[in-house]
Length: 165
Image (cartoon, rainbow, N blue to C red; front, side, top):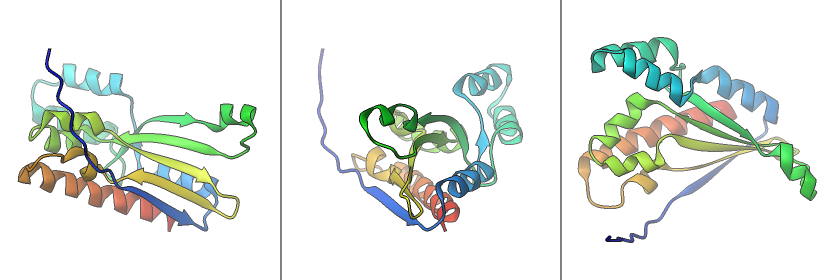
């Protein structure tokens, strides 16, 4: 067995919005499609080619932003037991057609695909937190991976600022 340890620096972003939690969540859901990993795997198993897979994923799951929501984790359902009375929703979203652009350059980029957003009710509005994907995925020099990851950063930034703005 061989263990290799690499330090890297992730960049966490917080967007503060005057929009209420429910409105931001509604806008996020309107901008994204919805799927689950088993559904993506079913489409992959039924597709004879990459082109067929891409067409079906785009047709069935991808929203206007280019993303789909895979899961929502409602932390508010349990943090109230500890005296934290806030709405907090972790949203896992992505798109396998975006992920492949990075994973073909470095398979370990799959550790950070899909991406995540944390939506928090701030009382006066809402906050969205996320980590810039390229800061997690590109830990060694790799120009093609960096280019693909920066494109994912751009798309995620557009989605988050669009739903919060």
